[in-house]
Amino acid sequence: MNALIKIKFSLLFLLCFVKFGSCQTSKYPKDFFRSPVDFPITLSGSFAELRNNHFHSGIDIRTFSIGKLVYASASGYISRIKVSASGFGRALYLTHPNGYVTVYGHLNKFSSKIENFIKAYQYKNKKFALDIDLNPNQFPVKKSEVIAFSGNSGSSGGPHLHFEIRDEKSEDPINPLYFGIKIKDTTPPKIYNLYIYPQDTSSRIDGKYKKTRINLVKRGANYVLNRKSKLQLSGLMGFGVQVNDFMDNTWGRCGIHMMQMFVNDSLRSSFKLERFSFSNSRYINSHMDYELNKIKNKKIHKSFIEKNNDLSVYHDMINRGFVNFKDGKNYNIRFDIYDWHGNKSAIIFSCQGVKTNSNYVFDKNGIIINCDSVNEFKERGVEFKFRPKTFYSDIKYDYLETKDSVYGLSDCHKIFNNKIPIHKYFTLKIRCKKNIKIDTNKLYVAKKLGKAIYYSGGVYVDGWMITKSKSLGEFVVCVDTIPPVIKPISYFKNPNFRRYRNIKFKVYDKHTGIKKYNAYIDGKWVLMERDLKTRTISYTFDKTRLKKGIKHSIVLELEDLRGNKSKFKSSFYW
Image (cartoon, rainbow, N blue to C red; front, top):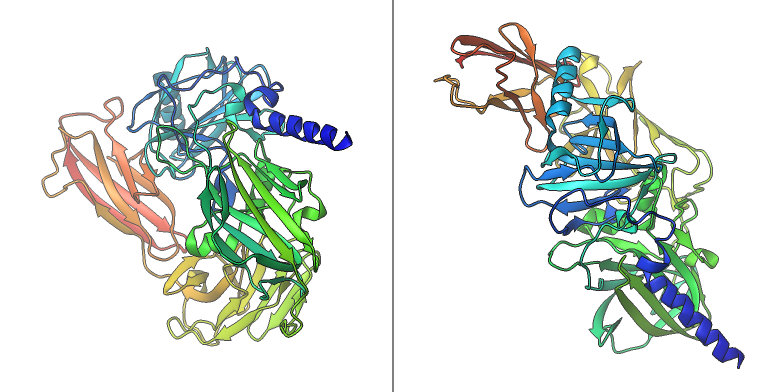
């Protein structure tokens, strides 16, 4: 009788989890917010899907083109406007009286009253990028009012609308689907591979100590291991799953909503991606397999929690999600994986606990770094220091010095490797070679990835370059004396632009990046809009500020992060 009651309770518990729409949305208002667009929504990106260094904070609504109407999802006021060459590009933030904020990103342009306000602000402050907070009386809006037009601005990879709902007090983003935003989805997640991670010296996977990938095949409604022999495990293990969600009427790969792991029908691990804190978003590098994401762009959800992973998405974690496999015992393991609509996919397999292979020699050489402590190291020509909780778990010390034959300004220092994630900046000092006859203001620390180098900043102090970095790898001192590149896209050899709407330039810097730019027409500052992904800046002809029918002079000035300057001069008719 007790067993029957337990089965009924388990089924009831599972049913509640499956019916996300009815069981879990009651704490959020479902009729307050409307869709921000006037057409059926399909997604190119889902809430909290795995991105590089962060969880996706909203949903990406496919617009297929630029210029679709964007509506206020509810009444309130515009509390923030942000314009940037990267990130959300042109973005609006609306605060609502029920304690939530909606965000609209990658816009092409704002409504006319907002657009006029922004342009006046940019001309007054003589800068393109801005991030301003507004009071409730400046731009009140009504529900369904047109506030903007969709676009592809900022770091967008194609035309779409990024839409968020945030908690006003905590600023935590929450999955907009909890608020009644409708999306058709009857498609379950698709599972690709299972990963197993040994955790201590007694851990073995089929007798070997190494991270192991196991292919999965679909059998009926579930996924099973694609192998003939029974999986043999010993010692402490963690698991990970490579999985994507798919939705109806769209080809885009999206993220899952919840994953649970059962061992012999006992829930041992669970996470649900309902909301998260921006301050904790970088813990994604511990939640997923950072190495596989780095080298193969594979997104793996781990079912275990590393020592310094403080994400709040985990629930019902027994032994932090790790499983200790003991000799002579059989284990039945099941992963239940859901999307937000409750569509489910499952992995089901059995394995056998076996005795550790005593003939296997585990490498115990080297220094083990305690991730909870300050770790400071001094090698020949380099010093680096890690604060407590920089690493997500204890790791083995790894450093190598090589001669740099390209720049010759310092030796090259390999500090661990770029496949290991870190959560905080670490400080780095590199000794420069003696008798360098170069303006030290032009020196910088670069991170090397193969033949490519990436700017990592730095200041010169008494023979050392000092900087900080949030990633590991190879570092070397470089010099930048080359000014930024300006290439006009507009045809200035026959500069009659009366039929054109803008003047456009390709601008970039090969070494350190562009720090600032300014443009002047007839000696007066003009607004040049920048797009980092296309490496362009453009001036849109403004009849309220520029006289038509005459010849004008134009000057464009650029400065990179090491003070190198470029200038372009010409004239045109408009």
